Length: 122
Length: 231
Length: 270
Image: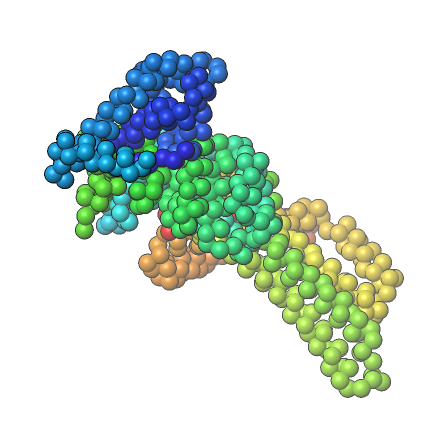
């Protein structure tokens, strides 16, 4: 898995987000067992405590649950995952719109641009 | 019980004060960065923890005890320079560690030797600087110690080896141990650290978790360091 | 741990020491052969030269071993405890006592062994040369045995103790010097000179004291002697030897703790 970290936010929040994206995009399937804290830490090149914190957040958010002896698993709850997908999508969209506004595009112009690009692809 | 504690720790060399009134506590299960420019006292602090130097005043305690052969048994030190006898081969160096350190895990060391393409029978004299550093690091990290003191572990090696070293530190992590990494290559190690200590001219300027620094200052530790220690 | 340290020290010093001894033994054999085959009046002149040369080389190698072994051992101490290797040795989970004693014991063992080896090499050369016959060896052994029986066991013990104490003294003197001067890197020469001066003054003091002691022991013996003059003389000699041996060991202990103290409390590795 590819990991990228920005400088201005705590790593655990970024880990949270990237793991969420992984779940939402299906990289980690519902019910699938997640790698161990150590494996994730080595893969991402980050401190295990940080990974632990991120996973705890995900647990709190209901995207992940842990079973004492067997490890951590992605939730089976498809609705929850869909919820998260929606939330992330809206966030991204919001960021995109804000960025376009900075360039001087208003909403309508932005939508038209998207339609045009969508048309070209087909 | 904290694994390392400094109370008003001071070390003077004649007129020069290398460390002045340092108060510091390190808990177990952390990876801590000791960050500061050259001459800020990082190496002095580490040497004091090993018993290679004695304090001018104040105290330094390992697991509540003064540095002694007993504390040396639980402290694994990686010096900045090559300290292994040059006539030894990698295998003999491992024999040496196995002889004196009960917590030395030989199989782990041999595995790492292989991964880093080091020959067991090659003498240290015949090794390049980078190879010597790798060997010393392997020996240090193959011990199951409670406190690892790494003095500039990634300074002289290539980026690929740097990655391997950091991954090894992560993989080695256990809750009973603490790793103190002294370095000035902060951007490389930042993701691996729990906490950062800024050391300037023998005094602790800052001791925070990485997360707290990023949250409060809105920038990475590397960026903060460059700001604080700008020339 | 002490055993392991000694093993390590033997390994470190043997790398240079064993070849050195080996060369001496080889030269002993060569010299012996040279005497056997070359040292005859009938051959060409250059044979004589080669013969003499090999003997000279052998004698030089004896000197080299005697001095070289000492240098190797002292260098090992300096490098292993006071140089970069000190970073490795002084963080081991062993006390400074063990570090010091391991070095001292190994040095003493080397000195004894190399001395014996020198003696054996000379015998080897003699044997190889054919100038000396097996019967000569037997006679020599017999003479030695008789000699030992003649000497009082006490004297033998004194000689042995004195020898060891003396070697330890020289060794510890160097150890102390290296360790102390490491702390005063600024004025190494000055401190060394001061040390030598103090040492000489102390020696003369003790020398004078010993003389006075001997004289008074002698006088005391005279007074209470009666007839048996030689017995009294011998007894006085033995007594004063004990005192001298005790002095050497006292110095040894002082030097040892001086070195230990500085290693332990003023490590100050560069």
